[in-house]
Structure formats: structure tokens, C-alpha cells
Length: 115
Image (cartoon, rainbow, N blue to C red; front, side):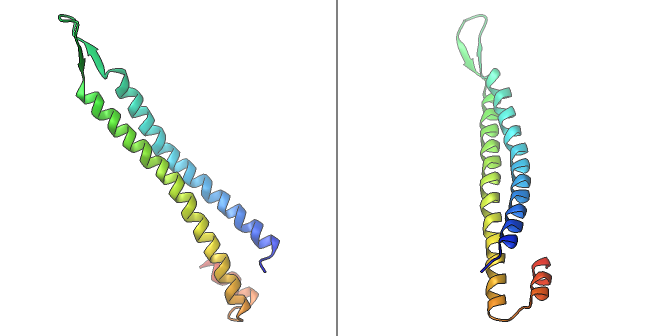
């Protein structure tokens, strides 16, 4: 059975990886939100002569591009967190199985985890 120390060490490593994914995805997400906000301000303009509203397609494109960028940032956060969980969990399980089958001693197990 995995020791509590190993479990908490893995949890600490997981939290560190989560912070990395949140920072990376958050930067991309905030760039997308900023692009949407910049594009939304000038999306509709009023023609001063006719008084009719017109759509500015340049800012519409910026808003759609910002939305796509924000979605990519969100996906980076979610998929990065899930992938990190699978990676750490599989390493712990593989180490435990190998130690139970007698393939690794404790020192070999620690060396294997570093690689």
C-alpha cells in the first residue's frame, strides 16, 4: 500500500503542476478576454448622416478571435490538470506494482521515479 508520505508528496507535486497550468492557461484566457472586450466596444457604430447602426466587422473578428483564444486558455487549464492527475497517478501505481512484484527495491524505486 502506498504510504501517507508518498501520497502527500504526490499531492504536493500535483498542486505545483496545477499552479503551472492555471498560470499558463490564465494568461491565454485573459488575452482572449481582453481581445473580446476591446472588440466589443466598437462593434456597432452609428452613421452620423443616416443615424443607422452599422456593424464593424473588424472588431467582430477580434471578438470571435478573442472568444476562441479564451476557450483555448480554458482548455489548457482543464486538460493540463487532468493530464497531470493521470501522469502522477500512473507513476504511483506503476511504482507500487513494481515494488510488490519485487522488481524494485526502495532505492531503485526512487531512482526510477526520478527518470
